[in-house]
Length: 145
Image 1: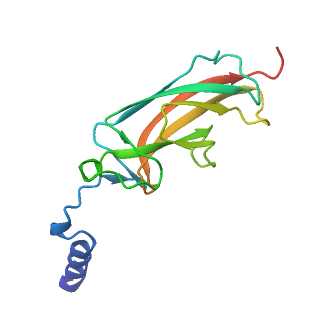
Image 2: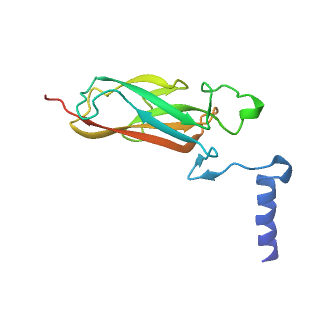
């Protein structure tokens, strides 16, 4: 029993040595950025978008230091740096846009069926790691007027 406990303790020490200062808050394969928030807004009529429509989005990010993907942030912003990945309907699909811009235009996928859908904006760390910081903008797709 003692060797099992010793193995677990040794594994924990090797995985996160004290000198490394492991402060990442990892949950469900995502990382949290302390006190970060993101919100999506649009000037488009969210109650009547069509497949193929361009939808302008304004993204507001609080406590996120925006950097382009694969960019090394300044040392002072290693813990709060990130960029946006925007998805349509779910984050398990390919993002429709990857950016550090706060004013963007996204396109409703051309094969979208009528009904309720959503754009999802998720903050990612510069190395591509997903964070738990997300916002959704709900839209209603109507192919007929």
